[in-house]
Image (cartoon, rainbow, N blue to C red):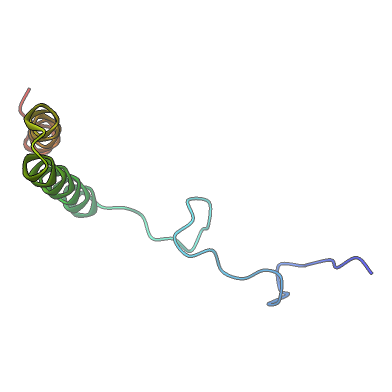
Length: 78
């Protein structure tokens, strides 16, 4: 038997939480974008710290530069 789903069939049409094409997904705000940028910068810095612990200063510097670029974009600095 082939299962067919309608938009009202809860067994097959489960909600797609935060999917870009789901009309129920709330619109992103500038605050959300800023928080995401800050989270990315924190991630870059945490990875840089691990690279330094592992003795890879070149990799740490690259990651610090990535964090700096992310924060510069957030602050509007070129």
